[in-house]
Length: 111
Image (cartoon, rainbow, N blue to C red):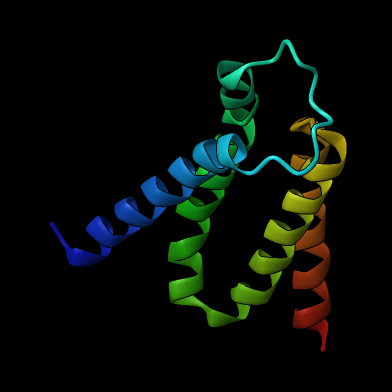
């Protein structure tokens, strides 16, 4: 097996783990209802972790082949993170991040 494949698997696994683990440890304020436990927070983060893991797996080979795709990918990640933080839903952030990627890619390739 090539080293790039192993490195990509390790990277995706770490990012996926952090998206599930960090919400359990970082608690800004106490705005969460008292009846939600650790398992509730853990299950709430599975959606965003899955989307980000898929995004990393699909983007890394593209960025390695064409470095111009790095900025649109970072814009997509930023929009995904901010919109998920604001809405706590996965549907709208996924659509917005794909839209942001497309807009940034279009602006970069036209220039």
